[in-house]
Amino acid sequence: MPLTISAAPRLRTAIAAGLMALAALPAAAETVGKVGVDWIGNDIYIDAVTDPKVSGVTCHVTYFDRSVIDRLKKGNWFEDPSNNAISCQQTGPITIGDIDLDRGGEEVFKSGLSLIWKSLIVTRIYDRKNDTLIYLAHSRELTEGSAKMSISTVPLYGETVTWTNGKP
Image 1 (tube, rainbow, N blue to C red):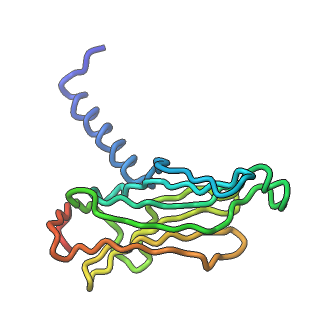
Image 2 (tube, helix red, strand yellow; image 1 turned 90 degrees about the horizontal axis):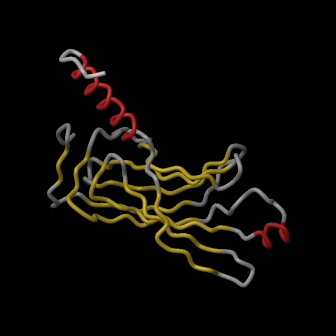
């Protein structure tokens, strides 16, 4: 059935709304490295994560993946350790979309570290006074918090940065 003149604007609006909804989802990671750490198959993975609302910034996040042998040996079958690290850098021209500017920041990436209880989270916070993006990697556990965290900053001072809604 061909589109009528009146249906075309509604279709464009629906497509735009769908794309905006996808942009609001946390970023997806791409595994760029894997390092074996012992003979039983434990590995460290390195993922590249792009911020869905800040183009031109890439974060590299590491995490530990336990082998089947390690899980059988130590128990705690469904969980990986909370150990992680993050490093974020400018990897292109920076364009900042509609980001959350409050002190709690905004979750930009989430990945499970256990079946249901633990997640690796990357949160972005904008430090307005120092004109810097802060990326915090930490574990969120359903039953108890974890003090293990890692932080990386991307200074915007002196850089050409495009703010789609105007600089705050």
